[in-house]
Structures are given as C-alpha cells and as structure tokens.
Image: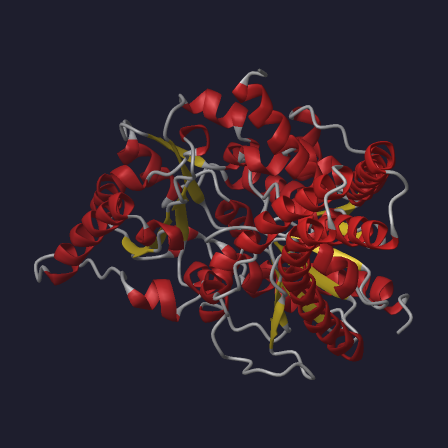
Length: 530
C-alpha cells in the first residue's frame, strides 16, 4: 500500500495543478473520458463473452451511466456573483450569498451508481437489475447536471453584463485581510487611465469584509472556488489586463488565463522579502516605483528580464506634500509613529509595536508631539492590540498631564478620519519599520527613523537599502536620545535621503508619477477594441 503522506502530496499536487492550469485541466479531462470509455467498452465486451451480444437497453444503459458519471465527477462549484454591475439582478450593496447547495452527496452517489450499472451490464443481469442502478445514476447525476446548467446560466449573465460595461482591466485579488487597503490604494490610479475596470475576488470568506471596508466604484465580482472555470466565461473581449496587489499563491488561478496581460503592482515598495518573490518572474509586466526595486530583485537572486519592468513611481504619493522648511526651524516637531504589521511568520516580522510605548516615550523626552498610526491589521489581533493600547496609554497620559506640553494624536482621528498621506502631511518626521510607509515618506523629503528589531545598525542598513537614508533605532533603544536629537535637529542624513528618493521613487515629483501611470495605461487600454 502506498505511503499515505506520499499519496497526500500527489493528490494535493494534482488538485493544485488542476486549479491553475488549463492545459493540465484539459489533459485530466481527456484522461477521465478515456478511462471511462475503456470501462464502457470493457463492460460491453464482458457482457458479450458471458451472455452474448448486448442488446439496445444494455448499450443505452452503459453509455448513459458512463456519461452521467463523468459529468458528476466534476463536482461543480457555485456560481460567481456580482455587486454593482449594471444588468445583473441584485442589490449593489446587498450581502454576499454564502448558502450554496451541497452537491457532495449527489456526486458521491453518482460515483457509486454509475459503476454498479456497468457491473450489472457486464454480468449479464436482467433489465430489472440494470434499471435500479441506472435510475439512481440518472437521478443523482441528473441533479448535478441541472445544477451545472444553473451555474452556467448565472455566469453567462454576469459575462453579458461585463461585456456591456466594457472593462479594460481587472484587479485580480486573491489576498487576505489587508484587502481594503490594497484595493483602495490602486483603484483610483487605474481608473485615472480613463477606462472602466472590474474587481475580481477569489476568497469568498473576505467578500463581505472587502465590500464593507472599501468605497469601490468598480463592479465587484466574487468568483467561486473554481475561479478558472468562471474566468473562462467572464473574461470578455475588452478585458485584457489583470493587475495583482497581493503575493497570494492563488494568483496562479487568474494567471491560468493566458489571453490577458498579467501585471504585478504589489501594495507598496519596501525592502521586505515579499518584494522579491521568485514567482514575480511569472508576471508579464512588473510596474515598479524606481530602480531600487529592480536592483532588489537582482540582489535577491530573482532573474527577471529587463523588458518586463516599467518604472512609473508611486501614483499614491501625489498627495504627500514636500517639506517647505528645515526641521530645525520647527519649534515643536510632530513625529508620525507608524509601525508595520508583524506578518504571519517570524521571518517577516519587522514590527516595532511590541516596544512602541518605549519609542514614544523617547520621542516625548525629545520634545516632540506624536501621531500614532499602527498598521490597520494590528487591531484585529488581540495580542497586537494589547501593544497598541499600551502605546496609546503613554501618549494619552502625557496629553492629559497639564504640566507637560505634549499634544499627541491617537485613536480614530489619525487612524480612520485621516488617510495615511494626511498623517504624513501633518508630521515633520517619521518613525517606522521596514515598510512601504518609509518609501512613500521619501516623497516628502523630511527626515525619518527606522527601527531595527533584530540587527546591529550597520547590518540593518546593509540588509535594507532604504535604511541608508534613515536614522536607525535599535530594539534596546540604545543611543535613542542622540539619534532622535539628530533627526529633529541637525538632520545629518539629508544627503543620503535625497539620493534614495530618486532611486526608490523614480525621480518623479508632485503629480508626475500619477500622470505617468495614467498615460502609460491609457495608451494600452485604448489599444483594446471594444
């Protein structure tokens, strides 16, 4: 008997390849039909040897049982559903449906009844014995087939509405809880190219969450678990570009559709390992903010042809205002403390939130006011929320103390009312971690500090190039007083910071990146005939 773990791996590999490759899927379908045909012929052949030439009823029963069983083997996924798409019935703001019929028992029953019908024919049993399993397979597999027809009709209805909408691009999202930030970040820049788009979402469990926490103007289409099946119908003639914002492995489900151009955008430029995933080489085009991103791939050992890159800066930073005065001229500087999320694995945990209270205490001692804006996901995890509250308590107590000048901002104002860019415009300096926040902050030209949670200063700057323009705080906050005093005073890192701004953000200033992005994709979208 084969090793169970080996079998499990092979099964998982088969399922994965079936989900992401149309070629593999077609091959698997051909194999199933081939095996089914062999079994059909074998059943009729055995019948001929045992009981003479099969009659019309035997042939019809065998063919019907074989066809229906193969159809039922596909175990159809539910239909996709759309929100905010004209021409599709339903409330644009209504809930995402989650109550889908369970076809499992019907499929399993078909798998049993079909082979039993073939065995009855092969054994030369009488019509009554053949009729029982045949009736069962007709009822069971027929129910599955009927459901498939309903799913197909609903999918085609969405496709027709999309054809009328004429989207040029789709945001192909297969990520997790950070979706609201990712989608909000990129929808406007993509729409600024002058053509409509659509948002495809893969993970149904996030459908409601994404729609409740975004103000998307594009239609939202929730795919089923069989995304490839859906996309084969939903990719209408005008839809020729898929954009990817998250590193999810399930992006490959979208990438099974070869007739579109797959474009990697990501959700921010940073020196985190996620910025140099090897599978980025599988995208047709990679939009990066500056040459630093291209160098990052080369340093990380990810080989990507130069022609796949296009440098367009960061459209989102157009709202970040450049500094108009030196920080030495600010009587009481305001520092934005924006720690990143800890990630799902320790290897990618760069968050300083665990000792955020100590960091803001050091800023208070240096005579600064603090705007505290932790990563949005931090408040969704109880352990991280504890560190958020602990940091907020320090700032709240200093604000409430009439004997101190501190006037710090915490809670809803900097986290919900203001955008991150608005927080940046109200700050004179930044303290953050290895994060895309730092790259965007370079647009302002203002000083920033980064927190090294694991490495000595020199090694930290060597590992993370954007830190070469930063003041570096170590986890033990040794020399924090001197480091912060330099950042808020002489600002000795101004030169390296200006050089990094060009390398990281492509040399664009003001609205130049947003305009370059819109112009680049307007030209490409315009080339797709409706």
